[in-house]
Image 1 (tube, rainbow, N blue to C red):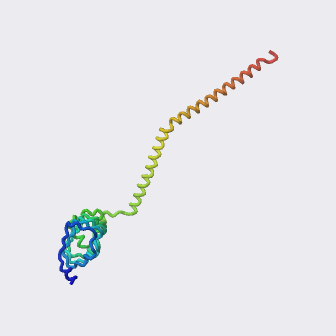
Image 2 (cartoon, rainbow, N blue to C red):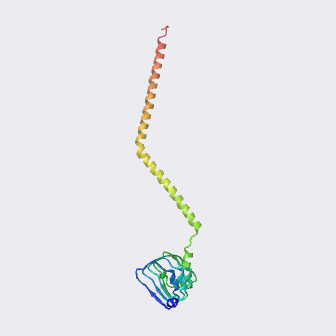
Image 3 (cartoon, helix red, strand yellow):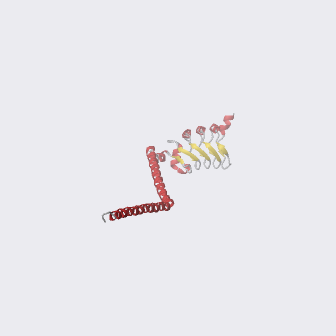
Length: 208
């Protein structure tokens, strides 16, 4: 009796009712349902796989919620679906290929709008990146950052050294020059004194 009542239910419209939580997996028991509108609520979590059992479904609106994860592949069996809106959620991955969902998406791309990480099989293949190229680019970027950082650090250190130590260095240099000059002067005076004594010694010989 209960299952017959569920089968007789043809439409559920809970638009803008501030519903929260996840879509219950038991929803797949509504085998006779043709219209399901859960848009503009606060539903979160993944779309249940059991929704693919609702093969009588003709209209499905899950837009403007917080649903995440991938579109379940079971939804590819919803062959009677002629109206779909899954826009403005956090759905990611790829629209199941070769399904009514893909056909509807090709006819009206807006039905998947606002899901920044969701793509059709065609757009996914067009934007597919080579992992090796991506890793190589990352390696080049890292090297660029390293060498840029080293160059910047070296330049900054040089400027800092000049600002901090230039005065001290010039002072030490002047002191060194003065010290050398004093030593040279002392040696010249000592040499003159020795030469003078030697010259005077010769002039005061006994024969003079």
